[in-house]
Amino acid sequence: GENVEQHPSTLSVQEGDSAVIKCTYSDSASNYFPWYKQELGKRPQLIIDIRSNVGEKKDQRIAVTLNKTAKHFSLHITETQPEDSAVYFCAASMGAGNMLTFGGGTRLMVKP
Amino acid sequence: GAVVSQHPSRVICKSGTSVKIECRSLDFQATTMFWYRQFPKKSLMLMATSNEGSKATYEQGVEKDKFLINHASLTLSTLTVTSAHPEDSSFYICSARWGSDNEQFFGPGTRLTVL
Image (cartoon, rainbow over all chains, first blue to last red; front, side, top):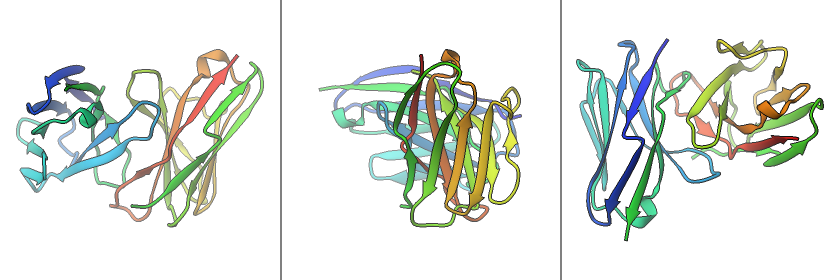
């Protein structure tokens, strides 16, 4: 089955700096890669996703890049703010409606 | 986005009892619902996939007789933890989607504590 590795497990940045979280996946058939933000005790919230026919996608301060050949994808957050502090999960699946395999999560702390 | 609710949000029960958790799609018909389990400071692990009107598909290592899943309608799926034990204490989250290639929407989760 699919295996998703996520790094780093914790990331501390200064407000205004950029944060990068990286994930690798094992199944070349995976074609949908969402990123979720989860605050303590809350549900995961989709913040951005990318499909395998696209190499990069951007939404304001958030961007995701995908390298299908290397089977890795990354989340980039620019101009970080304290409210960006949360746990971020990457995931992979064979289609948006299919089961998601999650990475281990990254706890992002943005210091004011 | 679409709204998914879960009930209860928090439950404490004694060891040996059964607990039922409901997952509802409030403004769309969910052809598929997924049940995940999340331990503290850990990732979400898929337990089972539930399609309306058919038996759930369980992931390897998940006991189907212990975690009973029913998806009787297009807006409701239930997870029953039977004969709960302290090691079943966890955060259980459902997600729901319609169609075959649409985004999943997550419920708010249910925190189960078994004493």
